Image (cartoon, rainbow, N blue to C red):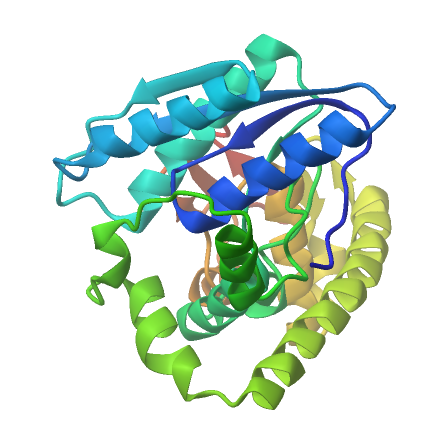
Length: 301
């Protein structure tokens, strides 16, 4: 497997009990045991409370942590059977970040792999999240994903080779969830070479995005003060550039979860709205339009 090995340090390993995370835990434990460098792994498991049999997942992960001699931390979210993918993800990362902060770990490590990255790219294309959404699943500060270059079939092969035990989450086959539909109905239609082509596009776009984001941050630094953006400068920008600047400004202010329709709406409002007008960004923030600046209000700090 082509794996980006994390540097020595303390890490929170997110383990659900599925094949991906059980292979991740096995690989990291083996690497740490064979390394002369200091590694400390903390096994973290969240029971989302979406299935009656989810306690079995916790027991499996706990047993593996005990076998490897690693600390194990878990919690229960009690989300219920009708919880959405977004609710589960938010609860999971809130828990993982809490564990990371308490343990003073360098980062969280997840088992997301190449197929997950392709699913995310397709999902976000459909949602209209733009260039950033296509490359959303990647390693970033605080979250490492060493399996991103590894296809799913190699992970399963590793699990079988080392006789690892794992649990299949029954909700993973429910195509009512958008990601499951993509996983089971769309990606299987791709030939191997086409999946590789899509993967190469995502990797290249990730590099391009990094360069673009650097340029955008530099321009924003020259035209923002606190939570305000120079409106007169913004109004002179071409529409597509305005959309990129608007999205970069929201990211800079800690706002995420918007889609392309939100960006389009805000850009038009920023350029043509009457001074004093206010427009909702998301539930927790709004943009106020003045003669010479745009201001974000209601930001959580």
